[in-house]
Structures are given as C-alpha cells and as structure tokens.
Length: 183
Image 1: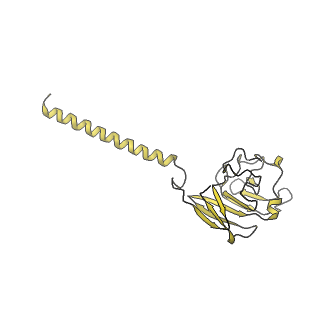
Image 2: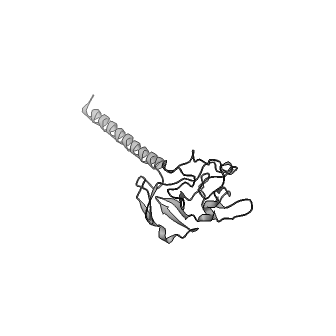
Image 3: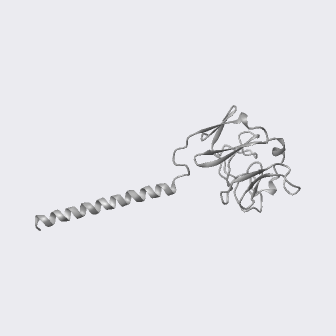
C-alpha cells in the first residue's frame, strides 16, 4: 500500500473515532440531564425562620427547584386529622418521607408540617382549606387541578385522583429555624 493511501486511511480512522467520542459525550450529557433530580445534584440547605409563621398560617418557599409548604398547624388543624378508615394510606407505607418520621401527624413535632407543595398525581399547587371547610369535609389541603384532598398531615383521602400521600423533604428543626436539606 502506498504511503499516501496509508496516511489517508489513518486520517479517516482518526476522524471517525473522534466523531464517535463526541457522539458518546453528547449522549452522556443528555442522559445525565434527563435522569438527574430536579434542581441538579447540589442540595444546598435552606433555612426558614419559624418565628414569622403564626399558628394556622403557612409559608411557601422554593428549595432546589421545588415548591415547599411550611404549615404551622393550630389546635383546630390537629383536631381535624381524620380517622384511618377515611384515608387511602393512613400509616404512610407507600409515600416518600424521611423514614425516621413515623408519627401519624407526619412531622418531627405535631405543630409543623413540611411538605412539597405539589399534588402527587399531577404536581399541581395546593391550597389550604381551614377547618371547618364544610359539613362533609373538615378541611386540609386541596390540589388546584382536580380537587384532590389531603388531610392536615398530607395524607390522601380515599376516592381521590391521587393515590399517594404528599412527599416530605428532608429537614431538621433547630429552635426557631427549619433547615431544609439535612436529616
């Protein structure tokens, strides 16, 4: 084989290998973007001052690209928690939450509920319906899209479009501060 043909062959092989490497790198970037969690890989903690939230009031914050609802439950909200037979998953066996949270009120302490503020079926925003909402419902959280109802612990009622309880992010309470993103 003449020297000129050999040089052209080497050049073609080198260019094809470079094109294949670029294609693989492109696919890696696309796949990582598709399968990474919302907000990216970095989970920076966020502090919320709880002194500013009165009983019965709430605050909405955005943490790592997701909406979070911090609700200061008053006595009426805690009294409105329904019996287990009204709920789809009263023991929170199928939901996403820190595993150390096992109490029926689904929080570290009864007066604070910290949840992602999006329904579990379509990801719609949630509205707070204070008790007593009506004779048929004691109040809780309702999604804006299809009207799915959750109690004041974020547990879904039976017969709703959603089949899972509201998701609880990892958080910690330190005095009058709530810190999202830490266990």
